[in-house]
Image (spheres, helix red, strand yellow):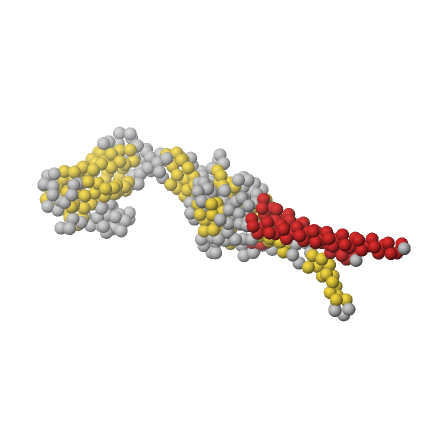
Length: 397
Protein backbone atom coordinates (compact mmCIF):
# COMPACT_ATOMS: atom_id res chain seq x y z
CA UNK A 1 0.00 0.00 0.00
CA UNK A 2 2.79 2.39 0.77
CA UNK A 3 4.18 1.75 -2.70
CA UNK A 4 0.98 3.22 -4.09
CA UNK A 5 1.82 6.53 -2.39
CA UNK A 6 5.22 6.82 -4.04
CA UNK A 7 3.80 5.63 -7.36
CA UNK A 8 1.07 8.26 -7.25
CA UNK A 9 3.54 10.97 -6.23
CA UNK A 10 5.82 10.09 -9.15
CA UNK A 11 2.83 10.47 -11.47
CA UNK A 12 2.04 13.87 -9.97
CA UNK A 13 5.64 15.04 -10.40
CA UNK A 14 5.91 13.76 -13.99
CA UNK A 15 2.62 15.19 -15.19
CA UNK A 16 3.30 18.48 -13.41
CA UNK A 17 6.54 18.67 -15.38
CA UNK A 18 4.58 17.91 -18.55
CA UNK A 19 2.22 20.78 -17.85
CA UNK A 20 5.20 23.07 -17.24
CA UNK A 21 6.83 22.03 -20.54
CA UNK A 22 3.61 22.43 -22.55
CA UNK A 23 3.03 25.81 -20.96
CA UNK A 24 6.55 26.92 -21.82
CA UNK A 25 6.12 25.76 -25.42
CA UNK A 26 2.89 27.73 -25.75
CA UNK A 27 4.51 30.78 -24.15
CA UNK A 28 7.25 30.68 -26.81
CA UNK A 29 5.00 30.22 -29.83
CA UNK A 30 6.15 33.60 -31.15
CA UNK A 31 9.79 33.35 -30.03
CA UNK A 32 12.16 33.55 -32.99
CA UNK A 33 13.93 30.26 -33.65
CA UNK A 34 12.42 28.54 -30.59
CA UNK A 35 12.44 24.75 -30.76
CA UNK A 36 9.56 22.78 -29.29
CA UNK A 37 10.47 20.77 -26.17
CA UNK A 38 9.19 17.22 -25.86
CA UNK A 39 9.03 14.89 -22.83
CA UNK A 40 10.29 11.31 -22.66
CA UNK A 41 8.54 9.20 -20.00
CA UNK A 42 9.99 5.95 -18.62
CA UNK A 43 8.79 3.42 -16.04
CA UNK A 44 10.43 2.82 -12.66
CA UNK A 45 10.77 -0.92 -12.10
CA UNK A 46 10.41 -2.06 -8.52
CA UNK A 47 11.24 -5.73 -8.55
CA UNK A 48 10.08 -9.27 -9.20
CA UNK A 49 8.28 -11.68 -6.87
CA UNK A 50 6.98 -15.22 -7.07
CA UNK A 51 9.98 -16.31 -9.15
CA UNK A 52 9.34 -13.53 -11.62
CA UNK A 53 5.65 -14.25 -12.03
CA UNK A 54 4.78 -10.87 -10.51
CA UNK A 55 6.40 -7.64 -11.62
CA UNK A 56 5.32 -4.50 -9.82
CA UNK A 57 6.49 -1.08 -10.94
CA UNK A 58 7.39 1.86 -8.76
CA UNK A 59 5.75 4.50 -10.90
CA UNK A 60 7.24 6.81 -13.50
CA UNK A 61 10.76 8.21 -13.56
CA UNK A 62 11.36 11.93 -13.76
CA UNK A 63 10.85 12.67 -17.49
CA UNK A 64 13.72 13.78 -19.69
CA UNK A 65 13.34 16.51 -22.28
CA UNK A 66 14.54 16.86 -25.85
CA UNK A 67 14.13 19.54 -28.47
CA UNK A 68 12.39 19.03 -31.79
CA UNK A 69 14.85 20.36 -34.37
CA UNK A 70 12.48 20.73 -37.30
CA UNK A 71 12.46 24.07 -39.14
CA UNK A 72 10.04 26.76 -38.12
CA UNK A 73 8.09 28.73 -40.71
CA UNK A 74 10.06 31.36 -42.62
CA UNK A 75 9.03 34.94 -41.86
CA UNK A 76 10.18 37.11 -44.82
CA UNK A 77 10.77 40.86 -44.91
CA UNK A 78 11.78 40.85 -41.24
CA UNK A 79 14.39 43.61 -41.58
CA UNK A 80 17.84 44.16 -43.09
CA UNK A 81 19.79 42.70 -40.15
CA UNK A 82 17.86 39.45 -39.91
CA UNK A 83 18.69 35.97 -41.16
CA UNK A 84 17.12 32.53 -40.98
CA UNK A 85 18.70 29.11 -41.25
CA UNK A 86 16.78 26.64 -43.36
CA UNK A 87 18.15 23.22 -42.52
CA UNK A 88 20.76 22.15 -39.98
CA UNK A 89 23.03 24.41 -37.99
CA UNK A 90 23.26 27.37 -35.65
CA UNK A 91 24.55 30.91 -35.81
CA UNK A 92 27.75 31.13 -33.75
CA UNK A 93 28.00 33.89 -31.14
CA UNK A 94 30.27 34.84 -28.26
CA UNK A 95 29.18 36.29 -24.93
CA UNK A 96 31.10 39.08 -23.10
CA UNK A 97 33.03 36.43 -21.12
CA UNK A 98 34.38 34.80 -24.27
CA UNK A 99 32.10 31.76 -24.16
CA UNK A 100 31.00 30.47 -27.56
CA UNK A 101 27.24 29.92 -27.80
CA UNK A 102 24.86 28.86 -30.54
CA UNK A 103 21.47 30.19 -31.61
CA UNK A 104 18.80 29.77 -34.27
CA UNK A 105 17.58 33.32 -33.74
CA UNK A 106 18.91 35.58 -36.49
CA UNK A 107 17.51 38.85 -35.17
CA UNK A 108 20.70 40.92 -35.04
CA UNK A 109 21.67 44.56 -34.47
CA UNK A 110 24.66 46.90 -34.78
CA UNK A 111 26.17 48.78 -31.86
CA UNK A 112 27.83 52.20 -32.00
CA UNK A 113 31.18 50.60 -32.90
CA UNK A 114 29.78 48.67 -35.83
CA UNK A 115 29.77 45.27 -34.08
CA UNK A 116 27.09 42.84 -35.20
CA UNK A 117 25.32 41.63 -32.05
CA UNK A 118 22.42 39.45 -30.94
CA UNK A 119 19.51 41.18 -29.24
CA UNK A 120 21.01 40.17 -25.87
CA UNK A 121 24.35 41.81 -26.76
CA UNK A 122 26.48 38.80 -27.71
CA UNK A 123 28.99 39.19 -30.56
CA UNK A 124 28.04 37.46 -33.81
CA UNK A 125 30.95 35.47 -35.25
CA UNK A 126 31.88 35.28 -38.90
CA UNK A 127 34.30 33.10 -40.80
CA UNK A 128 37.16 35.41 -39.82
CA UNK A 129 36.11 36.21 -36.27
CA UNK A 130 33.69 38.78 -34.84
CA UNK A 131 31.81 40.66 -37.55
CA UNK A 132 32.34 44.41 -37.45
CA UNK A 133 31.68 47.20 -39.90
CA UNK A 134 34.94 49.09 -39.43
CA UNK A 135 34.48 51.92 -41.89
CA UNK A 136 31.74 54.54 -41.91
CA UNK A 137 33.11 56.02 -45.12
CA UNK A 138 34.88 54.97 -48.29
CA UNK A 139 37.86 56.81 -49.79
CA UNK A 140 37.67 57.67 -53.48
CA UNK A 141 38.46 55.03 -56.08
CA UNK A 142 40.08 56.53 -59.19
CA UNK A 143 38.83 55.32 -62.55
CA UNK A 144 41.15 52.79 -64.17
CA UNK A 145 38.85 51.14 -66.72
CA UNK A 146 35.79 52.02 -68.76
CA UNK A 147 33.49 50.75 -71.49
CA UNK A 148 30.84 52.35 -73.71
CA UNK A 149 28.07 50.54 -75.55
CA UNK A 150 26.91 52.62 -78.53
CA UNK A 151 25.97 52.57 -82.20
CA UNK A 152 27.47 54.72 -84.95
CA UNK A 153 25.14 55.55 -87.82
CA UNK A 154 26.31 53.72 -90.96
CA UNK A 155 24.30 56.19 -93.08
CA UNK A 156 26.33 59.16 -91.83
CA UNK A 157 28.35 61.07 -94.41
CA UNK A 158 32.13 61.12 -94.34
CA UNK A 159 33.14 63.88 -91.95
CA UNK A 160 30.02 63.60 -89.75
CA UNK A 161 30.72 63.38 -86.02
CA UNK A 162 29.12 61.95 -82.89
CA UNK A 163 30.23 62.83 -79.36
CA UNK A 164 29.72 60.75 -76.24
CA UNK A 165 30.63 61.97 -72.72
CA UNK A 166 31.46 59.76 -69.72
CA UNK A 167 32.08 60.85 -66.13
CA UNK A 168 35.24 59.55 -64.44
CA UNK A 169 36.80 59.99 -60.99
CA UNK A 170 40.34 61.13 -60.15
CA UNK A 171 42.53 60.19 -57.17
CA UNK A 172 41.05 62.95 -55.00
CA UNK A 173 37.49 61.87 -55.68
CA UNK A 174 36.72 64.74 -58.04
CA UNK A 175 34.66 63.91 -61.12
CA UNK A 176 35.60 64.91 -64.64
CA UNK A 177 33.93 64.47 -68.01
CA UNK A 178 35.78 62.77 -70.82
CA UNK A 179 34.25 63.31 -74.26
CA UNK A 180 34.96 60.94 -77.11
CA UNK A 181 34.33 62.38 -80.58
CA UNK A 182 33.80 59.87 -83.37
CA UNK A 183 34.36 61.13 -86.94
CA UNK A 184 33.40 59.05 -89.97
CA UNK A 185 36.46 58.74 -92.19
CA UNK A 186 35.22 56.23 -94.80
CA UNK A 187 32.67 53.48 -95.25
CA UNK A 188 32.89 51.17 -92.21
CA UNK A 189 35.62 53.36 -90.67
CA UNK A 190 35.51 55.95 -87.87
CA UNK A 191 38.28 57.87 -86.12
CA UNK A 192 37.96 58.76 -82.46
CA UNK A 193 39.65 61.28 -80.15
CA UNK A 194 39.19 61.81 -76.41
CA UNK A 195 39.15 65.22 -74.68
CA UNK A 196 38.71 66.24 -71.04
CA UNK A 197 37.01 69.13 -69.26
CA UNK A 198 40.09 69.38 -67.01
CA UNK A 199 43.74 68.93 -67.93
CA UNK A 200 44.87 67.29 -71.14
CA UNK A 201 43.54 63.94 -72.40
CA UNK A 202 45.31 61.64 -74.84
CA UNK A 203 43.61 58.81 -76.66
CA UNK A 204 43.06 58.49 -80.39
CA UNK A 205 42.55 55.70 -82.90
CA UNK A 206 40.44 54.19 -85.64
CA UNK A 207 37.52 51.77 -85.54
CA UNK A 208 36.64 49.60 -88.52
CA UNK A 209 33.53 47.47 -88.93
CA UNK A 210 32.49 44.33 -90.76
CA UNK A 211 29.77 44.53 -93.44
CA UNK A 212 27.27 43.29 -90.84
CA UNK A 213 28.06 46.25 -88.56
CA UNK A 214 30.10 44.37 -85.97
CA UNK A 215 33.44 45.67 -84.77
CA UNK A 216 36.41 44.44 -86.81
CA UNK A 217 39.36 46.39 -85.41
CA UNK A 218 40.84 46.80 -82.97
CA UNK A 219 40.63 43.09 -82.16
CA UNK A 220 39.87 41.87 -78.62
CA UNK A 221 42.66 42.63 -76.18
CA UNK A 222 44.80 39.87 -74.71
CA UNK A 223 45.80 42.06 -71.75
CA UNK A 224 44.48 41.47 -68.24
CA UNK A 225 42.33 43.37 -67.62
CA UNK A 226 41.52 43.83 -71.31
CA UNK A 227 42.01 47.32 -72.75
CA UNK A 228 42.14 48.28 -76.42
CA UNK A 229 43.42 51.78 -75.76
CA UNK A 230 44.81 53.63 -72.74
CA UNK A 231 43.45 57.11 -72.12
CA UNK A 232 45.79 59.42 -70.24
CA UNK A 233 44.71 62.59 -68.45
CA UNK A 234 47.40 64.91 -67.09
CA UNK A 235 47.50 68.41 -65.61
CA UNK A 236 44.26 68.05 -63.64
CA UNK A 237 43.33 71.42 -62.15
CA UNK A 238 42.57 70.00 -58.69
CA UNK A 239 46.11 68.61 -58.35
CA UNK A 240 45.08 64.97 -58.55
CA UNK A 241 47.44 62.32 -59.87
CA UNK A 242 47.53 61.76 -63.63
CA UNK A 243 44.89 59.30 -64.77
CA UNK A 244 45.48 56.17 -66.85
CA UNK A 245 42.23 54.56 -67.98
CA UNK A 246 41.95 51.39 -70.02
CA UNK A 247 39.12 51.51 -72.54
CA UNK A 248 37.82 48.07 -73.55
CA UNK A 249 35.76 47.84 -76.75
CA UNK A 250 34.47 44.33 -76.03
CA UNK A 251 32.05 42.70 -73.58
CA UNK A 252 32.68 40.36 -70.71
CA UNK A 253 33.21 37.49 -73.13
CA UNK A 254 36.01 39.55 -74.73
CA UNK A 255 34.59 38.62 -78.13
CA UNK A 256 31.45 40.69 -78.74
CA UNK A 257 32.10 44.29 -79.71
CA UNK A 258 30.29 46.92 -77.61
CA UNK A 259 30.40 49.45 -80.46
CA UNK A 260 28.39 48.72 -83.60
CA UNK A 261 27.72 50.47 -86.91
CA UNK A 262 24.14 50.08 -88.11
CA UNK A 263 21.69 52.17 -90.12
CA UNK A 264 20.16 53.84 -87.08
CA UNK A 265 20.87 57.05 -85.23
CA UNK A 266 24.17 57.30 -83.42
CA UNK A 267 23.36 56.80 -79.76
CA UNK A 268 24.72 55.35 -76.53
CA UNK A 269 22.88 52.53 -74.72
CA UNK A 270 25.08 52.18 -71.63
CA UNK A 271 28.48 52.95 -70.17
CA UNK A 272 30.62 51.80 -67.28
CA UNK A 273 33.60 53.08 -65.32
CA UNK A 274 35.01 51.62 -62.12
CA UNK A 275 35.77 54.84 -60.23
CA UNK A 276 33.86 55.95 -57.13
CA UNK A 277 33.63 59.22 -55.26
CA UNK A 278 34.10 59.34 -51.46
CA UNK A 279 30.95 58.24 -49.66
CA UNK A 280 29.42 57.57 -46.26
CA UNK A 281 27.92 54.35 -44.95
CA UNK A 282 24.25 54.21 -45.83
CA UNK A 283 23.08 50.82 -44.55
CA UNK A 284 24.13 47.34 -43.48
CA UNK A 285 22.16 44.23 -44.35
CA UNK A 286 22.46 40.45 -44.38
CA UNK A 287 22.13 38.81 -47.78
CA UNK A 288 21.41 35.21 -48.75
CA UNK A 289 24.29 32.95 -47.85
CA UNK A 290 24.96 34.91 -44.66
CA UNK A 291 26.97 37.71 -46.29
CA UNK A 292 27.00 40.94 -44.28
CA UNK A 293 26.85 43.74 -46.84
CA UNK A 294 27.70 47.41 -46.25
CA UNK A 295 26.09 49.79 -48.74
CA UNK A 296 27.49 53.31 -49.21
CA UNK A 297 25.95 56.51 -50.53
CA UNK A 298 27.58 56.12 -53.92
CA UNK A 299 25.97 52.72 -54.43
CA UNK A 300 29.13 50.73 -53.72
CA UNK A 301 28.52 47.52 -51.77
CA UNK A 302 31.15 45.68 -49.77
CA UNK A 303 31.00 42.30 -48.05
CA UNK A 304 32.30 42.92 -44.54
CA UNK A 305 31.87 39.35 -43.33
CA UNK A 306 30.02 36.08 -43.66
CA UNK A 307 28.11 34.41 -40.84
CA UNK A 308 29.72 31.28 -39.41
CA UNK A 309 27.33 28.33 -39.19
CA UNK A 310 27.97 25.51 -36.71
CA UNK A 311 26.43 22.08 -37.09
CA UNK A 312 26.31 19.21 -34.57
CA UNK A 313 25.80 15.48 -35.00
CA UNK A 314 23.82 15.38 -31.74
CA UNK A 315 22.13 18.76 -31.14
CA UNK A 316 19.92 17.13 -28.46
CA UNK A 317 22.91 17.32 -26.10
CA UNK A 318 23.09 21.11 -26.28
CA UNK A 319 22.12 22.92 -23.08
CA UNK A 320 19.70 25.84 -23.26
CA UNK A 321 21.12 28.95 -21.55
CA UNK A 322 18.33 31.46 -22.20
CA UNK A 323 18.10 34.31 -24.72
CA UNK A 324 17.51 31.75 -27.50
CA UNK A 325 21.06 30.45 -27.04
CA UNK A 326 22.66 27.09 -26.33
CA UNK A 327 26.02 25.88 -25.08
CA UNK A 328 27.73 22.55 -25.57
CA UNK A 329 27.73 19.85 -22.89
CA UNK A 330 30.23 17.11 -22.18
CA UNK A 331 28.36 14.81 -24.55
CA UNK A 332 28.14 17.23 -27.48
CA UNK A 333 30.05 16.43 -30.64
CA UNK A 334 32.70 18.80 -31.95
CA UNK A 335 30.94 21.50 -33.99
CA UNK A 336 31.41 21.46 -37.75
CA UNK A 337 31.81 25.14 -38.59
CA UNK A 338 31.79 26.74 -42.02
CA UNK A 339 29.71 28.72 -44.47
CA UNK A 340 26.05 28.07 -45.09
CA UNK A 341 25.08 25.46 -47.63
CA UNK A 342 28.21 23.33 -47.26
CA UNK A 343 29.14 20.27 -45.20
CA UNK A 344 25.56 19.44 -44.25
CA UNK A 345 24.91 22.96 -42.99
CA UNK A 346 21.63 24.61 -43.93
CA UNK A 347 21.21 27.65 -46.13
CA UNK A 348 20.90 31.19 -44.80
CA UNK A 349 18.06 33.38 -46.05
CA UNK A 350 18.80 37.06 -45.57
CA UNK A 351 16.14 39.52 -44.42
CA UNK A 352 14.05 36.75 -42.87
CA UNK A 353 13.49 35.09 -39.50
CA UNK A 354 12.71 31.52 -38.53
CA UNK A 355 9.55 31.23 -36.49
CA UNK A 356 8.92 28.83 -33.61
CA UNK A 357 8.08 25.24 -34.55
CA UNK A 358 5.53 24.89 -31.73
CA UNK A 359 2.17 23.45 -32.85
CA UNK A 360 -0.57 25.00 -30.73
CA UNK A 361 -3.09 22.19 -31.27
CA UNK A 362 -0.57 19.55 -30.21
CA UNK A 363 0.36 21.44 -27.06
CA UNK A 364 -3.28 21.92 -26.04
CA UNK A 365 -3.82 18.18 -26.52
CA UNK A 366 -0.75 17.51 -24.38
CA UNK A 367 -2.10 19.79 -21.66
CA UNK A 368 -5.31 17.75 -21.52
CA UNK A 369 -3.36 14.49 -21.38
CA UNK A 370 -1.08 15.74 -18.59
CA UNK A 371 -4.05 17.13 -16.69
CA UNK A 372 -5.82 13.79 -16.82
CA UNK A 373 -2.64 12.02 -15.78
CA UNK A 374 -2.30 14.39 -12.83
CA UNK A 375 -5.93 13.81 -11.84
CA UNK A 376 -5.43 10.04 -12.08
CA UNK A 377 -2.42 10.33 -9.79
CA UNK A 378 -4.44 12.28 -7.22
CA UNK A 379 -7.17 9.62 -7.40
CA UNK A 380 -4.61 6.87 -6.68
CA UNK A 381 -3.21 8.94 -3.82
CA UNK A 382 -6.69 9.52 -2.36
CA UNK A 383 -7.57 5.83 -2.68
CA UNK A 384 -4.31 4.72 -1.07
CA UNK A 385 -4.88 7.20 1.75
CA UNK A 386 -8.40 5.89 2.32
CA UNK A 387 -7.19 2.30 2.40
CA UNK A 388 -4.48 3.30 4.84
CA UNK A 389 -7.05 4.92 7.12
CA UNK A 390 -9.29 1.84 6.89
CA UNK A 391 -6.40 -0.42 7.87
CA UNK A 392 -5.56 1.79 10.86
CA UNK A 393 -9.17 1.72 11.96
CA UNK A 394 -9.22 -2.09 11.76
CA UNK A 395 -6.21 -2.28 14.07
CA UNK A 396 -7.82 0.11 16.55
CA UNK A 397 -10.97 -1.96 16.59
